[in-house]
Each structure stands twice: as C-alpha cells, then as structure tokens.
Image 1 (cartoon, rainbow, N blue to C red):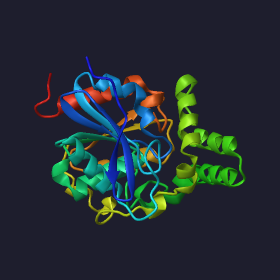
Image 2 (tube, rainbow, N blue to C red):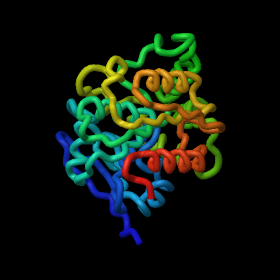
Image 3 (cartoon, one colour):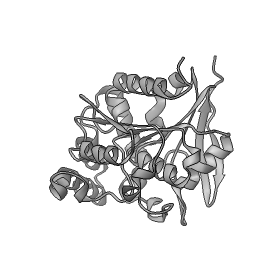
Image 4 (cartoon, helix red, strand yellow):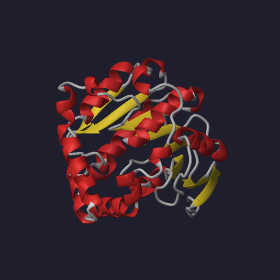
Length: 280
C-alpha cells in the first residue's frame, strides 16, 4: 500500500515549486498544461503509483507554486526537481506546454530523460510553415484565444473560460469539465496574462530546428477533437524525432487524459511495456 500523499515545496531561484511524489518503481514525471495544474492528474497519480514512482508538480504561478518575478527557466526548475527527488532517466509525460518543456529538457540535458510521452505537445520554435495550410490552420485557435483574452480583459471570467472550453475542452463532461473550469479559474492570472511566462527563458536554440538530436523513445498522442492544428504539429515532431510515432485518439480533446482516460491508460501502459527492461 502506498503511503499517504503529502504536498511538499522545493526552493528554486526566486520562488517555490509545489510537488507530490508517491510509489516505487520506474520513475514517471507528470507535467501539466498551460490551462491546468497538477490536479489534471488526480486520477492517474494514485493509479500509476501502484507500479511506478510518480511525481507531479505545478509550474511557476500555477497551483501551489509561487509566481515568477524575475527570469527563470522551466527546464532548470524540472532539473532541480529531478535532483531533489533523485529521479534517474524518468519517463516524462508532457501535455501541451508540458510537452514543450519536456522537449527542451531532452535537448538541453539528454542524459536526464529516459523516454517521452507527449500529449498534443507544444514546442519551441513553432511556426505556421510547419503545418499544411499554414496560418489558416490556426484560425480557430487564434479566434477563440482572442475572444477569451478580450472577455478576461472585460472582467468576464465565465465567458473567457467558455471560449477556452470550446477551443481546448470540447469533449469534457461532468466532473472532468468541472475540474477544467476550476483549474482555469484558480490559475486565471497565469492562463490569461502569463504573469510568470513573461519571465521565462529557454535553454539553447528552439526545439523545432533540433528534433533530430532527440534520441529517446518518443510517443505522441493527440485527440481528433483537439484544436485542428494539433495533429499537424504532432506529425511535424514525429517526422523530426527518430522512431517517434503519433497516435490519434478518437473523441479526445486537448485534455486527452480527462476526455479519454481509457485511451490514455492503454497508450501509457503499452508505451511503458515497449521500453527496454520494463516488461512486467
């Protein structure tokens, strides 16, 4: 039986990072999206801890982590957490913004990463030219993102959240939809104003031009009800990363683990079992 989960904090330059860890076995680190916090993994965290050592944490300004007030590196924050917990070459699960951080980590510190499971990942150096249709493919993204930003600026939080729901969480219902709305509301200043993001620095050159340098097993999941640009971005990454594969998940939106938890569990289990030395 796993010990009770206790939320802890770790000092980082200019602030504190909130994190949780549980379990024993192959290490897995769960990052979160820019419209969420570590609670997006509430279901998976305890399930994975039955067979793995699992850690999840909040990015700067999200959840229980303090906002950045000076330059910082999300990659160095993650390296600090790996060092703090003594995690060796974990499987990094990176959705959206978390995927961008995971890719930048792998390029800056390749020996620190065992494998990547990316979910509708962003990536540094993203460009319209990377997808068929170019800028037009991002039209819905940009229209709804602007509508959300305008509503937030006008003090209409519920309207702003609804625009984000249409863009990123169109498949969510019930408790999963409630959780999405709660996370956006609780993290609204970061989601809509990027109060910490404005201080973010990157490690090295953008990932888009360096994908061939990534040498760890990589699998990419993306939902067919996500932002229309996301499957194209996933394919761009897979073309550049040796051996990477893309799995399109029917009925899943951007928060794939919340909209299709069954498909996420199956994909993660299959990926872990495919990695060297972990067949159980």
